[in-house]
Image (cartoon, rainbow, N blue to C red; front, side, top):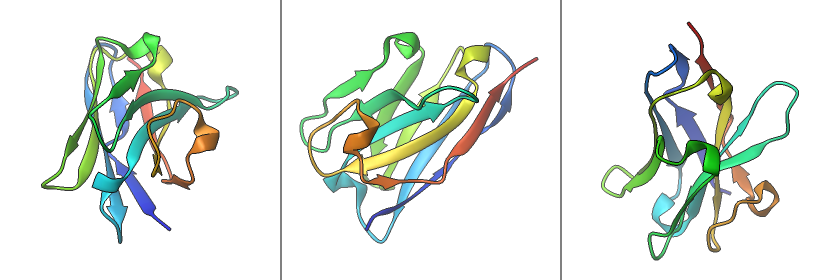
Length: 123
């Protein structure tokens, strides 16, 4: 089973930036489609961004288009989520997840999850 570890969360002011990292323990991420999801207090988990393991296809939810970028660094074997122009409504616990099939926006399609990293956007 793939074990994932997220890092890079923290407290940032509105308009600021953060870069989240997703790394794997014991397996290479290059064989997996990687999704970033988030869950705010009292809300359901939602898909944020996903990158394929084959053709480079990327999906971003509408609310983050133009602000968030998902990308792989194959040399480091890490998947990043670069977040810019952060808003208060981006505050949530962010999770990365892996699946061997093609990208998906449905959290139920992902079998391996990290523990999450808190992102708080506040002045």
